[in-house]
Length: 109
Length: 119
Image (cartoon, rainbow over all chains, first blue to last red; front, side, top):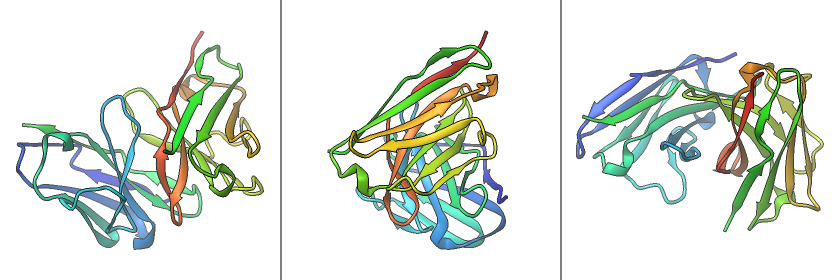
């Protein structure tokens, strides 16, 4: 089973700042099979990035994804008030088919 | 507009059963693979189960294998999760999510239904 470890657990930043979120896999993950989701309080998750670097429909270009192998990064270039949320990385593999990281909370400093 | 609406959650005793439903609208349900994902209170996301568009291929997380059964009725545009032998650790919000972004990505999701397993 591939375990995804996200860091930091909490990121305290101000609007306008750059956010860099990390997702590290216990084994190599194909870039095609790594995604990022955003979840706001009381809401369902929303797909942001898939295939490590492709933005989902309607996602602003301040969100970008990168990485390969075991190290992946979600970057928010300039935080908007609506970006303060919890972010999860996800990978698709063999067993279990899908696993999530434990999440990174981006909070207002 | 694509809509996924879960129902059927509630309070159930340990060892009990519950059947969740997910009503789909705004798209051709029979063409899309579907999943259940859960989130324990204050915790992260856990994938639970997958079903192919025809229902012929099914996967489960080890934590629910043998206790939960996923199914779908394409004529009724509905997805189901039959949950038996429920445990306290099954307490969570259960989301249905479709795979609309090829090949394997969950988008969109329903709003979730809360299942509480407690005596």
